[in-house]
Image (cartoon, rainbow, N blue to C red; front, side, top):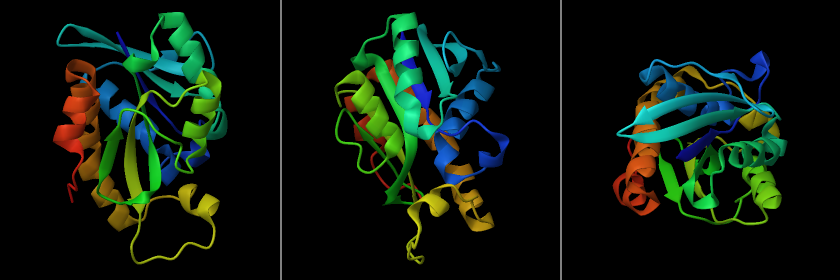
Amino acid sequence: MKLIAGLGNPESQYTGTRHNIGFEVVEKIADSFRTVFKKGKGKYLVAKITHRKEQLILIKPMTYMNLSGHAVVAAMNFYKIGRSDILVICDDLNLPSGSIRLRAKGSAGGQNGLKHIIESLGSDEFARLRVGIKLDEQPLNSFSSFVLGKFSESEKIVMEKMLPVCSDAALDFAINGIEHAMNNYNKPFI
């Protein structure tokens, strides 16, 4: 059993924002398996799927980005899933838009959702899939207003192309492990 956590913020005002790309990826996976999210046994929404005989638990924390660790730990404990079977999907301001980066472990890299998960687990040893949202042509005055801002029309086109790639990468992790997924997906796609 694998746990795939897509990070984001729960209120409708955050729909379509850069910070909610993790939600969009797990929603894409759930849609492709014709399942829906329901209330979980904690502050998260959950969808369950089976892919190539592997059961996957998809979650969307309802704790807001900066407290994502509470939801991830609650789901881990309820489903009895170890750190090596977790994949966290989030935005990354340091990666160019149109790219993703999978890692087996590592620092939060300035991403507050990852930071809280690391603090809550007491470890950085869990897989993560970072989705690039950085725009080359735009200097940032405020990181928070940028990540909480909605995608522009040109960014939406890029993200629509990236969502299936991210979905495939997450499913590759679930079946073949993080090393295999890293070898196949750590490259620019657009």
